[in-house]
Amino acid sequence: MAPPLKIVSWNINSVRLRAPNVETFVAAERPDVVCLQETKCQDGEFPLKAFREMGLPHVVMRGQRGGHAGVAIASRLPLELVDMPDLCREGQARTIAARLPSGLEVHNIYLPAGGDIPDPAANEKFAHKLDFLERLGPGYKTLKKGVKRILVGDLNVAPHENDVWSHKQLLSIVSHTPEETERLEASRKAAAFHDIARLAVPETQKLYTWWSYRAADWAASNRGRRLDHIWANKAALEDVKVESYRIHLAWRGGWKPSDHAPLSVEVSG
DNA sequence: ATGGTTGTTTAACAA
Image (cartoon, rainbow, N blue to C red; front, side, top):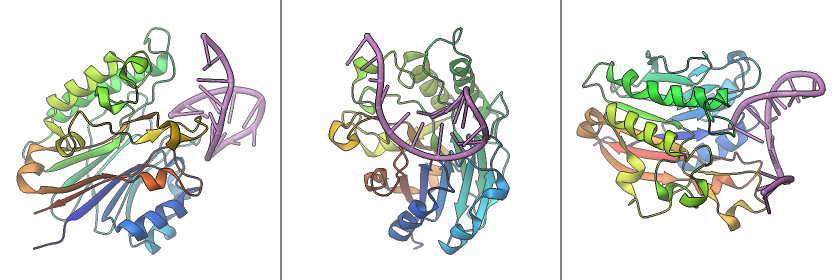
């Protein structure tokens, strides 16, 4: 039987600065596919050589000018770009998808953070975030059925009560408002995706993937949020078995860490 | 209740 396929999602917050972090992570965890968000570099600036040396020579990427956003998929196996739904009305570099030799599609999304004020009338960035969330469900509904798809990324929404350190205190904080959490769940269900984290870990258990840089001691205060996600559709779950789901906390610490920890899922079959 | 940090690109902006 073939060994499991290990897929990672990581908001790296500048891939040029943190290529060494990716390198130590890849050496320790040996993932087959690494999906990155907030690469913050244009395509010509991507550290391809470092990824080749990590054993991830196949890279598809989408960067933009100005040092914002940017997504990439790096893989041990060959990748073939596939079309994605049009989710970003601003045309930013927030989505990329590729097909593996097995036919499994990996979709990588960096959803807008949405600014600080949770009011679409007062905050254009929040309006954009809600629009992106609303496009997600219908966008995926139009894609061909029966294709195995795994969707990963920094979706910048913590949907459940135990996806944040304090449900009550975060209800009016962007990332956990009902406007966002309801849209995310509605879109996920409309697109027939399953939330791998909550298949693997009961909803009663706290799960975080992001901790603010602004805390004096992020681990001690542990005021985290689960902003990063791994979803799988029915076709994928019928074909493969989820062997593990992990949040790699160690990489939130160490040398110049991203404010997001990497997530991994192993699928076999 | 407020401010706290980081990265990119150059004083401001996004997160």
